[in-house]
Amino acid sequence: MSLIVRIIAEDAIAMEQLRAVRSLDLPDWCIAAGFVRNRVWDHLHDISPPRAPVDIDVIYFDASDMSTEREAEFEMRLRALEPLPWQVRNQARMHVVKKDYPQHRDTAHAMTFWLETVTPVGVRLEKDDTLTIVAPLGIDDLLNLRCRPTAFGRLRRAEYDERIAAKRWRELWPRVEFVD
Image 1 (spheres, rainbow, N blue to C red):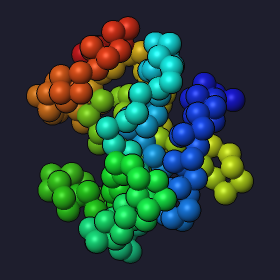
Image 2: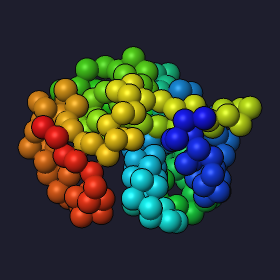
Image 3: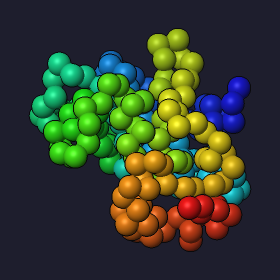
Image 4: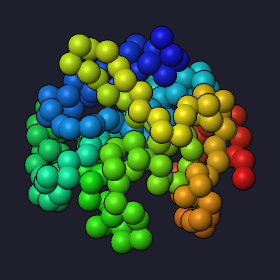
């Protein structure tokens, strides 16, 4: 069992949140970004229990319904199950929202357009209760406490730097090495 799977599987709150999202039966979904990254970094910094996330990023891919109303409906359904700061986004429509992004093929492809290597890591709870990690750029940087811009993030270096500063990662996780 990978360390990420173990960290998530042993976290009762994370598993409850994954069960809530699984109940929506979204296509090609996962909970990503801070949901995984923060738990892993908290674990590697011996912070227990893990800090509550600012939001819970649920991503999915459904080219047949790219309406914002559908995303809002999913957020309402999740809040009814768990009153948390859910953020549900259909990755099939990101090229519409962000005009200079290419059309994505699936959820994993969409994640490659995120700014830093430690964020495009997600987890999905399968119908048989196994956990699947979705990590199109790998997990090495996350597990080795190393943060760097993705290829896309290098093209948007100012956004990357602003994001790192705004999120206060250097302060929250002092052992993380920030690499150019």
